[in-house]
Amino acid sequence: MIVLSVESSCDETSVSLIRDGKEILSNVVLSQIDIHKEYGGVVPEIASREHIKGITYVFEEAISKADIEVKDINLVAVTKGPGLIGSLLIGVNAAKAFAYLNNIDIIGVHHIAGHIYANQISEDLVFPLVCLVVSGGHTELILMKEHYDFNKLGETSDDAVGEAYDKVARTIGLGYPGGPIVDKLAFLGKANYKMPDLKNIPGYGFSFSGIKSHVINLVHNAEQRKEEINKEDLCASFQNAVTDVLVYKSKKAIKEYGAKMFMIAGGVAANKGLRAKIKDEITDVKIVVPEFKYCTDNAAMIGVAGYYQYLKYKQKDDMKLNGSSRLNLE
Ligand code: KG4
Ligand code: ZN
Image (cartoon, rainbow, N blue to C red; front, side, top):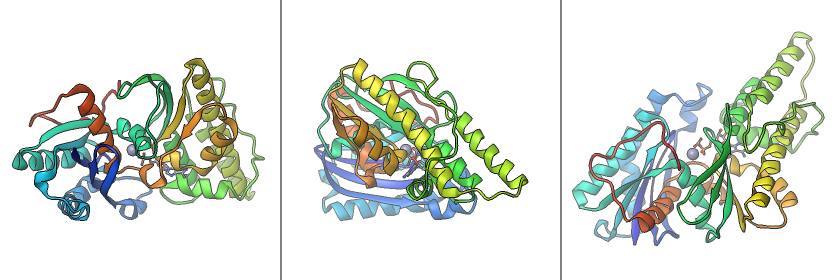
C-alpha cells in the first residue's frame, strides 16, 4: 500500500511517499526557518504564502524522488490539525485536489499522531507504551494500549517545552528557533544557576511558564546591575531543570502503567540533553527515539500515522475534509 502524505501545519511544507507504513520512498521538506528568523518566530500570514509557493513543487519532487507513478498511490493522508489555520488549509486543499483528480481515498491525520508515529519508522511499536510528546505547541504524556489508541495522562497547563526553549533563547539573544542553540550551549556550561522546582505539579501535569519567567527576570536583573550572564551556564541550568521533570514524570508513567516501551516525539525529541538523560535514567524498558530528521515537522510521520489510522478504522474522509487549528488527539 503506497501512501502520499502532506504536512503544512506550521512552517514546513512537506510531501512524502511511504510503502506499507514503513519504507520511506521520499520525504521532501521545504523549511521556512530562514524567512521567519528575521521576525524571531513564525509569522502566520507569511507562512501561508510560503506554503502556496512551495506546495506544488514538493508534490512533484516527492513523487519524482519516490520513483513511482501516481496510479500506484493508494491513499492520501494530510495533517488536518492542530496548527496555524492558514497553513493547514494549503496542505488540506492541495491534498484534496490531488486525491479528487486522481480518484484516490483521502484521510485527515492529527499532527501529534504523526509525531508519535515517527517512532514506528525506526521500530515496531510494542504496547502498552508511554510516549512523551514535546514540541513547539505540545507537552504531554500519552499512554497507548494498542495502535492508534491515545490516552492523555497529563499535559502542560501553560507553555509547551519548545515554546519555553524558544523564549529563553530569545531573551539571551540566541536567535530562532532557539531550542537547538540552547541545547548546544547547555553542553558547554554547568548547571549552577538556581532554577524553580518543576516537579511539584500534581499527577502528570507540567508547567513551564514559571521557569521561563524566572530566566527572563534573571537576565533583566543582571542587565540592570550591569552583570555578565554566563549563557552556557544558564542554558545548562534551564535544560537540566526541564529535562529532569520530563524524565521524572515519564518514569512515573512507565511504572504506573507497566509500559513495555517508552518513546519521545516532537521537535524537542531532538534535544541531546533529554536523549542522554533518558538513556541514563530509564533502564528497565525499551526506549525508542525518532531519527533526528523525523523529529521536527515532516510528511513522512503523517503518512505512517495515516496508514495505521486507515488500517484500524477503515474510514476515509471526503471532499468536506477541512483544517482545524484546534483538534483533540483522543
Ligand atoms: O514539532 P515541531 O517541529 O513543531 C511543532 O509541532 O511545534 O517542534 C518545534 C520546536 C521548536 O520550539 C524548537 O525550538 C524545538 O522544537 N526544538 C528543540 C530542539 N530542536 C527543535 N528544542 C530543544 N532542543 C532541540 N535540540
Ligand atoms: Zn510538530
